[in-house]
Length: 205
Image (cartoon, rainbow, N blue to C red; front, side, top):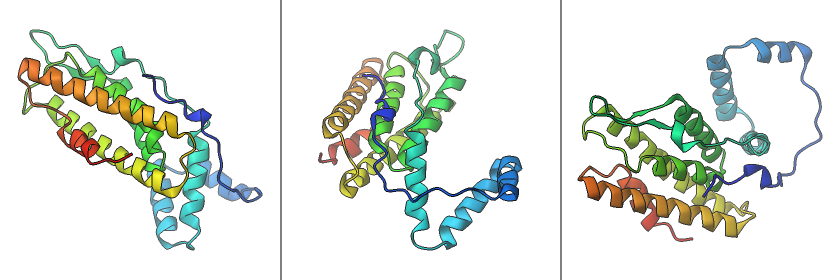
């Protein structure tokens, strides 16, 4: 199943009338280092007025809905050979960054398609139990559990618009995790997504 098209989600949050950014401040934003902007945003969200965090997340979701991330499963991992194991490819980091942005902004269901594609891309690969690939997949396992938690919060918030598509995304993730488990059993490898599959078992939707 392809990643859900997040542009199909409507920007339903109520937004105030837009003003403008002070010219000097805009110059600073355009030239500040990303690390400085992150520090400023964290400080602002931690110390600002109560409504600033919802306003920020609403703006983030509206921005994310305007863009999409295409997944080519053949560009996520290099194929292992007799002399070298499978390794993550640069495109995988782009996909993970997108998925993390989505579930971090409260769009958990929109991230599930991307994560499902990553899980499916591991089927047929082999890795050492204590190798770098296993460590990297453990991080993705944690990402999936966070995405599931984001989905639960999205359900409870009342922001979920397309329930049918959300269920399809959940079912596709479960299917990819089960197929990955079956593949791991075939070659006797350690299953990479144990926490994610356990989280799915406790998720009622």
